[in-house]
Image (tube, rainbow, N blue to C red):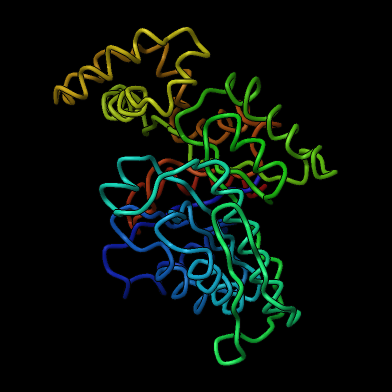
Length: 338
């Protein structure tokens, strides 16, 4: 099981030294998110100052960018990092795509499938100088002239990981991708009963097996030096769980455990702006399903115990900040690097 880390840098100028620090610590992968920041710029800086750590987006939002735009970004990073780049893609949800990005939301699952195939056709054109003639359901790419065609690169087989919760995207990852970003809002039972079997179904469609697809996740944890520190952390993590539990796109996880009624209640609370109260609806038993609770000394062992055989890469659901939580990171690295 690989142990990864996420960064969310306020200042791009800090990334080169931070990336060197993370590689020296022994993390296997460094991920960036598309939240307040562009996910690609930090990875280019990290690629310049590191040699071994894998670099990926978790995730870059696909639909606001055409497959051609995304293909260019991935191609450049794959070349710069000498094959260490992983392109993690996500669909986001309809309100963000239509209202924040002002782009089209239509058949997101099939559209993402078409998107991936379009990018692969573009990369094949660039690497092998084949005619570009991709005609899909949602995307058509039929023009590539020498002036705009990038050179062939040493590592053209760029891994694609997609993110999702429901069965269609699990199967799509199994069929077409090298990895799947499991949503932090999950339980071990949901992974075992829904995610893994559907990844396997998708893999069988393309003559592959589960072992060909890396399942990765930045998991919820509640931790501290002492047990009383864990109590102080519970409300914050419960708030994050309540937010996801209120979101219609993630209702399937709640329904899997018979918590559909709570989803409805939380959804009503969110729509009325009662965000500060929602964590009170998440019981300690529910928290234990969605998060790993342990002291720094025990945390990595409990993470491994829960996820062995379910996840192939793992990280924690908060970014690395140099100088903070160093005891926790060090204890976990000691266990994962054995």
